[in-house]
Length: 114
Image 1 (cartoon, rainbow, N blue to C red):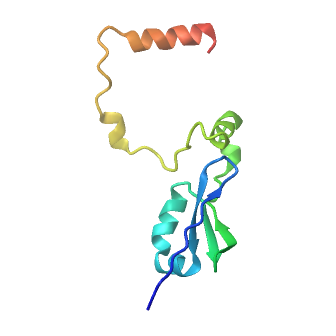
Image 2: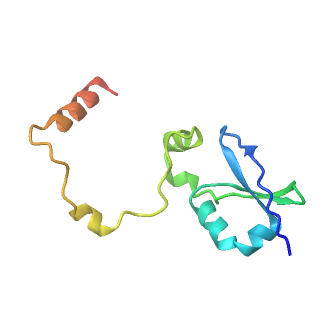
Image 3: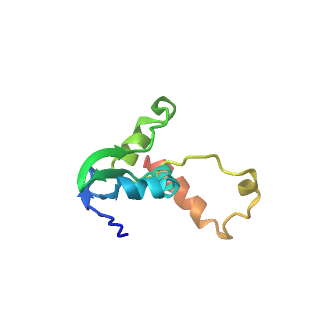
């Protein structure tokens, strides 16, 4: 028995590349593809080499996210987080900056209005 997987390179709206999977490949590896979708990727589904559907991540409630962050995400400049930081994150040691250079740079940026 021969299994043929067709990979099609398709540009998305952002100039990136959509991952493509034939229906048979999708059925046999659905959890792997869903993990990629959860990570923000879009998957183009093909049947006999022709696109028939696209699996895309669900949009979170946009009303809870500031417009400027949504704009940056659409532009591909940032990727918004999906979950909360674990409580243990806040117990990690901070950066080593004994001369306070990072704090001074931050204060200067805020004073300049950046």
